[in-house]
Image (cartoon, rainbow, N blue to C red; front, side, top):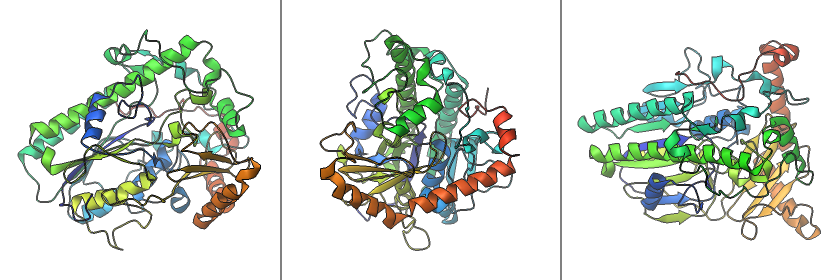
Length: 483
């Protein structure tokens, strides 16, 4: 890919909770994603992409600003992006481009917040401007629900989320058609942010039935209940999330997979509608398309559901870039992340990458990515008593737990991340090397203390620990803005 690509429009499609392994072109033997497969075939697929945090709100703040959590100070699903840190939206708008969002943002949503868009249509922000405040209580934790809704929702049908996604896509298709008729003076950015495949695992019937009654493979290392041999963080998260305790049989697991896979295929159909809209109005040659998700989903691996872990299913994200000047059918194995969306957007539409605009952390994916590059992901909320930090390059993953033993994986010999090398005597030099690399970026203990201090301040702001523990939660996911 060239450093001197002509500026073009950019369609950025963001999904929610899409396991990067759950796509046809990624090699999944069962999941059907013909439109994402088409997008990947026409561009570059980044197979080693990670989120900045495996939970919605901080991940989306990092995606907007090109900064890591320890630099941003947004730690959890309560402390959402408020527009005060400059985003690529602000920079693109300031350069005179139209930059429009349609759909889920999961920002703070307070009156007067300026997120940098020229227009924001059908937005979803954190519920009531405060989100699920029970997530602030980490030690001892509080329950945000018994986890039964994960399995109970796995069925054919419609939900508020699937109806919301249908409205988002229709509004985006209408927007594309309108802009195809009235060309812009400068390239535009359209961010279409869908909710699928985020639970509830209720998928429209035609998509659920793609997988119903199929002998779907069980997730890797599946374990009913809590696996006593798993890493302590896995056991801790499994107990606190409560999802897996409601799965009793393999049929239960496969029903949940039908719902999740059905939602992935439903999402894929929306990607197809957006790509078709570009083609219908003659914008395909003038528009680059980028697809990613805010984080992944464990989808049963190790007996876990939801996100919140640093394994590839959860901390990994799909990342595809296609369109004019992007080499087709190319696979990039170097490490990239959400942080890189920032400079990629700027370069795609022709905003100069200089000291006044670019993120120093971000790597434009329209430029070559160094093979030795490392990325960082952080986690500071429900299921963790203390901070979790993950570093990854093309070959190795290191997970630092402030209060638990570390994890270390050789991604070449163990791509499934099933063999933790961190305690092996012959791997101690490598473990110390990666711990030192983390300290070059940040002091994890200091960051952990800072996150907890901010969360304690928010606990006081929202009425104190007793009031939060006794209050009514929102059930594990943000209610849809439409009904």
